[in-house]
Length: 85
Image (cartoon, one colour):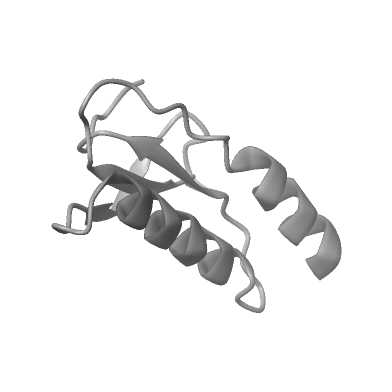
């Protein structure tokens, strides 16, 4: 069960398309209550730049997914928090 959740979450973490000069990445998670809801977890906007922020966001997503009993999906998107895509 845990392995299937991890596999599903890693598939759900999209390949991040790099567009423009945006250096900020935001970590989101799904909601168990409302599947359409995107919950803001963290924003990565360090001076380390686009690649640094993207790598740290993806690392955080993978670590959250690996928590025992994790039932939500985590993913990263370029840019600051948005309620809808």
